[in-house]
Amino acid sequence: MASAPVRVRFCPSPTGNPHVGLVRTALFNWAFARHAKGTLVLRIEDTDAARDSEESYEQLLDSLRWLGLDWDEGPEVGGPHAPYRQSQRMEIYADVAARLQDAGHAYRCYCTTEELDARRDAARAAGKPSGYDGHCRDLTSEQTAAYEAEGRTAIVRFRMPEHPITFNDLVRGELTFTPENVPDYGIVRANGAPLYTLVNPVDDALMEITHVLRGEDLLSSTPRQIALYAALIELGVAKYTPEFGHLPYVMGEGNKKLSKRDPQASLNLYRERGFLPQGLLNYLSLLGWSFSADQDTFTMDEMVAAFEIEDVNANPARFDLKKAEAINADHIRRLDVKTFTEACGPWLRAPHAPWSPENFDQAAWEAIAPHAQTRLTVLSDITANVDFLFLDAPVDDEASWLKAMKEGSDALLLTAREQLAAADWNAEALKNAVLAAGEAHGLKLGKAQAPVRVAVTGRTVGLPLFESLEVLGRDRTLARIDAALAKLGA
Ligand code: GLU
Ligand code: ZN
Image 1: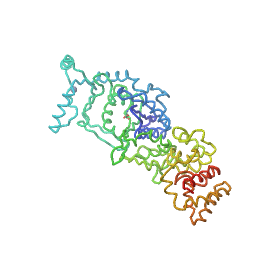
Image 2: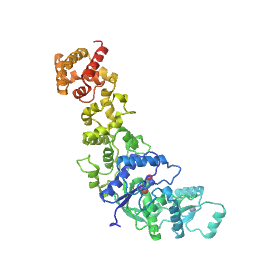
Image 3: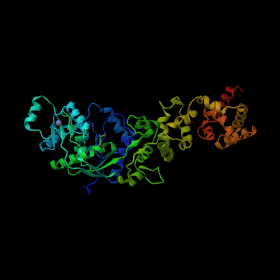
Image 4: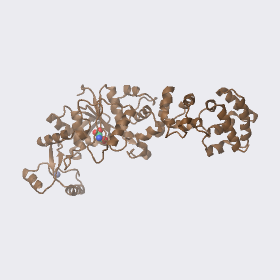
């Protein structure tokens, strides 16, 4: 198998919004496949009709496309193992479940929940292993007939071997599970619905998956799946047992596992804030892996070239929003100006932009964009940075006004207005104008600049002021200073 071409899978269940843990799993599988020039299979595990939704399915595909995590086989691209949605593969699972029972690898278990609970409690009280006790393992045909006559329903259970199971986890090294810790487990519900425990390894087998890379939360299912593989190989359903690697937990605030329901975990949040896909993926790749000791920002091509599953660290990884933002900011700076200018598009239009659409001026935007590019953490920051160009009047930010408008600001603004009115309209000359106005009032540039900035943009912080004034133009600049002077009663 080591020589078989790499085939990995990403197999989400379409329940709810995609979260960052899911994306990290998708990313590591994708990077592993691309690095090995192998195949990434996308399989949709939608056998739970009560929890799965078509909307989540569409969102998943849309998210993967946005991220640029492309798949080689799966929904919409097809492939030799189609269909790739488990809801369309039910006959396959029924057939395999029947064959497992015929061969004695699985059996019907008639125990009721009450009986199971009572025996589990008794085992616990006696200090014995509390998993399924094998009650129905070897029922005689008379016992089976009697249960059936009582009208009992049965689940199908897989018969675990009585020896320990050892495997070499690609991330964690050698792991051994003893039989008392891995009791016989259900693979088909009483109503005939196949469970994750069956459908996931059956499809991995049929789709000839060579490496299973998934979250640590699934580690306990691995010994069960390895035992099931042995049976599937015997039945000719599987060709080999894949290798397994379990990716570390992602921790959120307060040293707790980041949960799907954590708002911080929602992929949509990052997308709506204007993370670049490459910025977010770059950050997520650091949850358990590192590119190099002294470089945290890199391209996906660089990640693919460097990615080795053996380098993944088994220790829990901490989700650090500040670091994610810093890396995203790096990626924004790395864009060429034209790409940056286009990428901001959605945040310059409704519903993000607070100005009327006819106020938007593409030439002004293109002129200011290079000055904005180095200052953004996320693309959505752009709206507040350039709104002074497209709003009829600057935003009315009381806190900024109080901070900048001091005793003497009116006199300073009057002088600045005169100097600006007489200046050539380019950033250099505008700077000299404000500098001269400051000197006339004994103020350094920084202090002289503050009231001008607030008068013109409404805010104390923003893009470089003189470039901003240059783009805004003489008439609007002077009109805004006049409005500020009127407000100051000057
Ligand atoms: N559908 C499973 C999940 O979303 C896949 C688990 C696995 O990778 O085996 O958790
Ligand atoms: Zn039973």
